[in-house]
Length: 301
Ligand code: G4F
Image 1 (cartoon, rainbow, N blue to C red):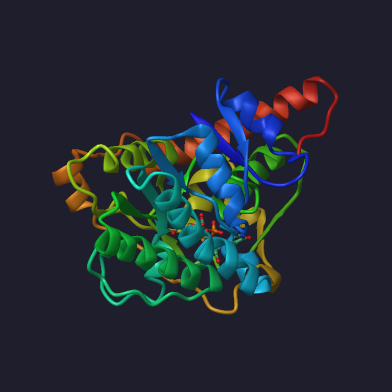
Image 2: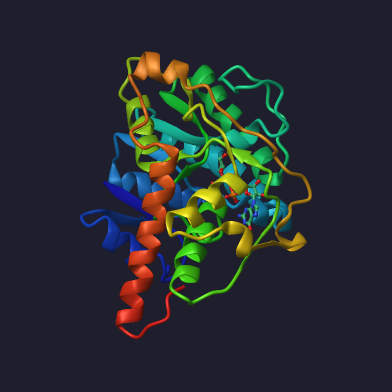
């Protein structure tokens, strides 16, 4: 297994090496076509998983054209690199439920029309359709996984789930007093990232390439996530959560809920972690990390 590393002295490299020992790394950047070709020539992979993106929706509003370059055009650069080096390489594109945006039907399926609500969502629609187009035009084994929100204790602190569980742990341990959030009414179909990675792999092991929705089929609001996370440590979220307009977005995706029936039927894919289990494992992980930092006299993030 090889990972693509971007930039000079990338600070995330050490973290990935620690979490996933045994991975080899190649340098490359989704903005630089020739670097992708060189990386593929070096690694000679059978499969390529393109998860590279500016993936934080909030940031995409502030850096819209860069998001288009990386999250959107980065996909065609990778597809062209594959065609140049070995068109037999199987390709997975990380498409997103953000493409559904202002949803046209509920639940969302592979045939639900897109109506993205952010520069990120718009760029992902391009990535999705260029993947479909290269499959149809050049016969490539290219799949698009339309993944709904997938979370774990490894989630970045900028995303709402980890922001909440990290704050819950710090509040419980007396390291923080309150938590500022944006829109509390947004509803998301939150699943466990490990289950979703299994789905990505399954997509590339089939006889023919296709596109699949990956989701739990349940939706919960940010408020519900907060309520469960605070309750897990015996606290009431009403006592600690405040709203701050600076975390609200120029346009919001109000409700997402996916129908993964096709993936269940054709890939045999199912979820293994329920919503309450997901919240609990994330809170427990942040509690353990902050307790460990406290015992070593270090303040955690
Ligand atoms: O955690 P979020 O930032 O995730 P979002 O926007 O749903 O996107 C994530 O899931 C997508 C899959 O559908 C991925 F494609 C994408 O890359 C990313 O992984 O926000 C979830 C909801 C939003 O409605 C947001 O407005 O939570 C709301 N929210 C409320 N307060 C907040 C906050 N989001 C963040 N990040 N921070 C807040 O303080």
